[in-house]
Image (cartoon, rainbow, N blue to C red; front, side, top):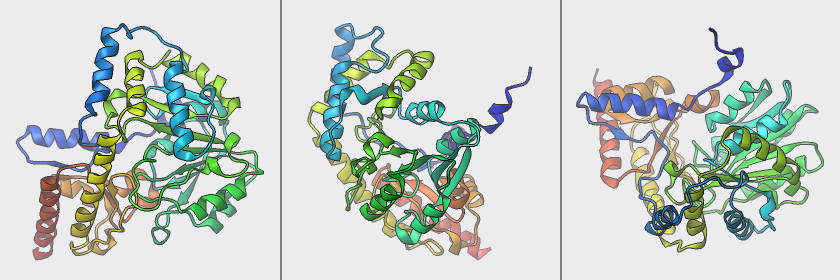
Length: 390
């Protein structure tokens, strides 16, 4: 039997592949510092886990509504309304197992072969993977380091055509840590508000900003009914393994996404949704403390990276990733990432794992302890010192 031809167009997420390689080296007795995987190194706040335990004891172990339990959708609507400054109706909220279905399902519902999708590059690899899988045409927008890894707006305007069906935005961004300036978002909204186009606004890192606050394109005139907001619990509340995300959707998309959800997952686990209510409506002090700690780590880690010959690391404005430019080392991105794992015991990702325009960069997650981050930069220095001595 042969797999369907469409499977050849489906990509992967390199972080998990590198994690497997790194774990294999650890099994051989090697010391590996894990800076490859993008998840908080904190425990889920206790009041959230206690809510899940109580939900299990109370019998929240059965099927729930495909769209999500009403109380959680109300809590999400309140949260998004207050954090974005817009009025969200719970009827427009869809709860799903993780954030990725809000990439999958709207694309499956909207894209036909030949439709064009403008998306940031480098960026989360599942965007490009799904565009290709569905037979649509990927139109990469290079992220410009000198603009804080935002778009060149003139280039963006030139890429808009009659075939443009979707535009993907991600701010704060993976892998760059960039936050798109409000004036750039406003300019993009101005170019799109009178076009027949949908924006997928991936805002999963919306709470993780360290200076200027990210702005959602949904707040601009004419954009509410054109914007899909993707958010979830994984990053803000250290709930990566809970697999719970959500989308705030234009009205015309809700039924289609629910239909795809019922065909694939039936519903999101009921007891985790009770934990989600506790996350949104409970105390936020642990989440805020975690974000403050990421900021502190960012400051010290990036400063150290910038002392390594050949590295130039802009200060990321959000998320928990450092994305240094490594062109000065003379290495290609993939070769360097592989060598750092195999020879230095530092697991990181090549910039090209996030798209062709990631060449010349590597990504480190600084969601790790101070001790490990200092050890990692020490290993980097020794690695390059050895190579230069050779």
